[in-house]
Image 1 (spheres, rainbow, N blue to C red):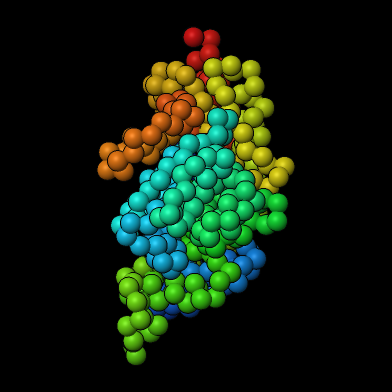
Image 2 (tube, rainbow, N blue to C red; image 1 turned 60 degrees about the vertical axis):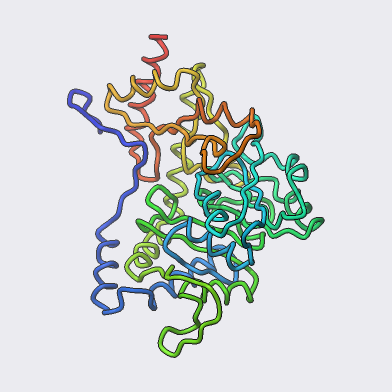
Length: 367
């Protein structure tokens, strides 16, 4: 229980590692193979089974997973890649690292997901790929995206960094496209500290991804140089944490849904906040508790005075000067200017949620 008589600090995200996780890491180190080895292979195997895909390639981060997928599908200098204006900037940086041009589309007015209706307007003769982003477990209308991609001969690479194990009709997010890229960083459903992976059903792309991960060779002992790659290898230490998190997957998902439902119920009377919905009934997993607040900075300051940490939304991508974007994105602005993540995470105590809501109610009375 929270002792409100003493100073407390509630972080915006809470995830715990157990003694069992520590033992797994210790065993990985004791095995003598602390780089990419049998534990990584087992982690990839179990992820593939869990997601229902034939091929998984683990790597150092979700950002690198995006880069590797683009490389494997042949994206190169002066190609164009369409992405939404609302996403973490890694989605833009990955194609830019290859010399490709980023083309942005606005998001929907009610949820920060790519407005698929705008995609065709952005397609040119140089367009080679579409990268939808499944923010906070929400699914883009992928049937439309796949239809457009087929019509124009484009590759679809899903950024599912925040969508791991969220479901849409027909399967898990990121498993129905040419490639799905996922993050294993600390504030995700399946944290390994740092890490990520690419999921694909394409055997040829799988083989390319494995080579790209290790400087473009099949084997570092008896190597042949096939193509451009780099050292993007995962480690058995990180994979050992991932195996432990997989064992707790159902419990973690249940906890996230419980926290979302609690907020959903208790925020209804607070009219200065608007909960951005996640469709749990359709299988979407609410990794974060996202709200809109027109008095965002005042609320941030107020909660901080009560030792509660919250996280404002990332800026819109078009505000990054090095992207050199000059279009207008009216729907994006409300999210970047008003968006806020309230304390959450699979190991966030429900007592903390109650305390946060109490302070939100107090803020409401002071408006």
